[in-house]
Image (cartoon, protein in one colour):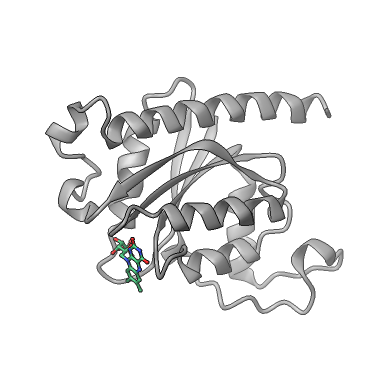
Length: 196
Ligand SMILES: Cc1cc2nc3c(=O)[nH]c(=O)nc-3n(C[C@H](O)[C@H](O)[C@H](O)COP(=O)(O)O)c2cc1C
């Protein structure tokens, strides 16, 4: 599958970037998978600046940064959103980036990897309600890191060795989340190509 991992924080001192690298390292173990990290820091998206809802504007002319973001998203078949939890939800910068999307994620699956002081369950719950608005959906499993992700994942995306070996720890959860995403990605890619 062609997989993009989206870094859901642009905050100075953020840890979502190293969480994304951790996801990338694990995803590279999947067969026939191309993995790319998309960093919202690389897309200077203004707060949504369009006069008509993107999905309902046949004459749509996105600003150049938004067009760059949309063109990049179109290349993938599946996505991982790495989301922090901010004030019982996901980040505003991620919401704004999602609101620019019209049909780039249509009929494609999204897996969720959350982290936060309490693990990010509320960020995940909110994203599960939002993605269907883009004709996309989230896979059943998700991965949660409770507490300070920066204390257990290094800059290169390596998880603490003891946690990595724990069959009930985050590495095992991430592996299962990505395998499930791969299954949905393959099934949906086949259905899309058959025009089902
Ligand atoms: C504005 C703000 C609000 C936060 N609110 C929550 C919260 O409601 N629940 C939670 O579990 N963690 C919360 N946290 C902790 C973050 O999820 C945690 O610091 C995470 O690492 C932030 O991701 P980032 O470093 O990539 O930005 C909050 C952090 C910030 C900056």
